[in-house]
Image 1 (cartoon, one colour):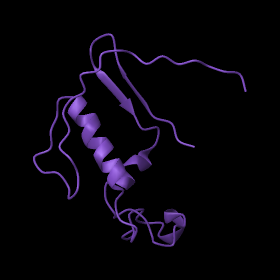
Image 2 (cartoon, one colour):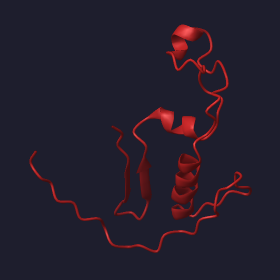
Image 3 (cartoon, helix red, strand yellow):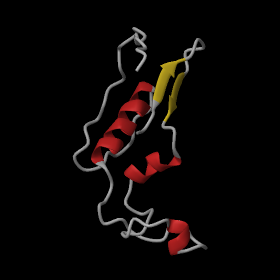
Length: 101
């Protein structure tokens, strides 16, 4: 299970939290051993110890570009296969119904 949060603060700032430092692992392929093992056990001196042969995750790359576009930032160059996003025009806050499980 993973949790993300994104909302517009009363100041107008867009707040985004991925809930983990591993969000960035979907952006490139240099972060872990291909064994999938604990990288601190693989190499206690360098946690970025190898290239993940699974490569980056295009959905995470596109989601990052989309969030940055909503913040008014566009990359100079996009990765292969990514679509240049435009900022969202949605101004309606989400509605959530909590249901007891």
